Length: 292
Length: 268
Image (cartoon, rainbow over the protein chains, first blue to last red):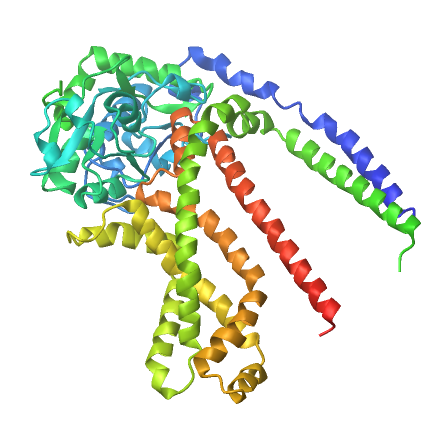
């Protein structure tokens, strides 16, 4: 019995040696990008053949998604084609040759949208700001919406009488996790109190209603939804001036997915023929005073 | 029972098998087809260095929450345990209340208690109710962990043989004197390892307070991960938590060992 460990060691070491040969399946990844030239529906690089699988978070909030709530979706229904992101998705799908019934929506929480490994969606459309740091991990489409951040406050509170960004410093702000709103607070408002960061839109709104935060920073179209529906006493104090490069939302793709260029072609067409502008006019309010 | 030669061989085998085991594990992981991507997104040294300073600063909030909560838990749990061990029918309502409390707060998930208190209590809009999310996070942790720790104390109290109490009472000590001078000193000493075990749990659960918006280490790592689409900050936060809990775990082991040696030495 005393020899058993030594024998075991030899066996394990030989397994180790044979295990080294198993790392040669990288070559297949490069073939995906080769097919970028063609954007025929049949030659698109899709998760499920013949179907455009699109991810977004649940609940899907207006004004980005609309229509009556339908399970499993809460608050709205991405299949409705109503709301800006749903409408843009169907417009892009149409340009790529998909019928409305070929578009399938799946729930993709924001935090898992950038997880490593194969993606379950062709693209994710979820008000994701395209930034250079993020673009190292996923591929973004071109902008489908150029976004500004805005400030929502509760009427009658001290912060509601502020008129400049400089006057906002003494207050406590909140933002939703994963949004560039948080970056805007930290880098540009530079408040004296540490901002609160909330996992969900609901939690951030609850904190604003409770006056646990003085102001909620969200993108401007969302600010209109927050004040219209979620916080009846809320008001949009204004939108923030753009600092540095303008921010935009992009659809997120698995890194190296050849579908990106086809979606970009579709977005370019939709932008030049005025479809994007008219969908924005239809679904998004974007008129608020700019804070000095 | 073992000779010196067998002891040395034992050490050699242990070292060898450990090395082989972890080498195989490392090889299996690093040769997985997705390893390069996992390494890039979870174990990215540059991201680690970049996110560590801010996560460390945020971690101070975890330590603060832990310290404050622990002080309250130690006292309140003992009170609860004593209340539950009160004898006689007169104290039945208090015992029942104690049982109901322990059942409720051990049954409800901690994150729900935090969410309900953190967003619920300030929603009352009472001027004297604090609004701070960290405050309510601490209150929630104290409520939940008091229920657990009181059970630990109670187990300790019940482990002291009734003859100890009877002897104390026969010497003329009152129930309270007997409890304070005879029963509790023995009970508390016996439950120190499980107490510390619960505090390791508490250290980790401070991360749940982030749900209310307080930027503690895990929340900070989520912020960094979402900004860069890279999960390495999670690993950085995990390293900090482990660095805090491992010394406490080893200290607990040492206490258990010392206690066992003492009891063996006195031969009881």
